Amino acid sequence: MSKVFFKPHEAIGENDRIDLDKVLAQLNFNADGLICVTTQCFKTGEVLMQAWMNKTAIEMTLATNKLTYWSRSRQAFWVKGESSGHFQHLKSMRLDCDGDAILCLVDQMGPACHTSRLSCFYLEVNNKSNQVQLCSPYFQKTVQEEQA
Image 1 (cartoon, rainbow, N blue to C red):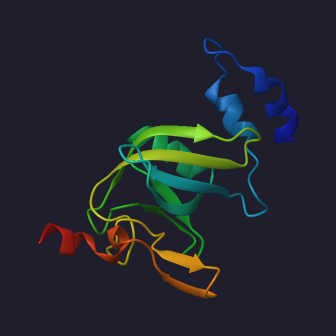
Image 2: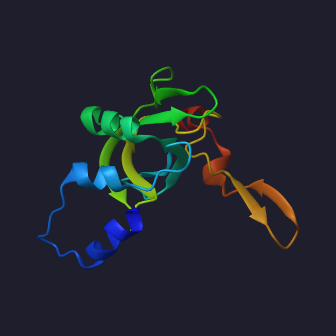
Image 3: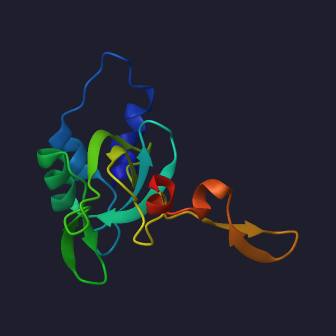
């Protein structure tokens, strides 16, 4: 259904506007009522993490400007940074062309990953050696090591 809604908007112009409530109602949530969210640092462009939101989590995020996700394992909302203090402050929320994915640009306070790394994407696949390894030295250090 959302593709039918989003298709006519592919030619949207710079000054065109679409009502947010209408767009949220047409997002393509999966069978569990969730949509994939990729979170990126608005300053550096670094991809920080991937998580899930439902419609209420999107609304909570927009209302508070703090990223609120849906935990599939706990079946509960979680505000990133609520327990660690490593909040993600929303700078921009973007929807993809067919309404089945969200990109959030954030101001990340501290590490994004529960491992204390700046990003959750610190493992790199080396196809030539058929191995997985730590990425560049940027990802090898935790935030605490960089601050020391």
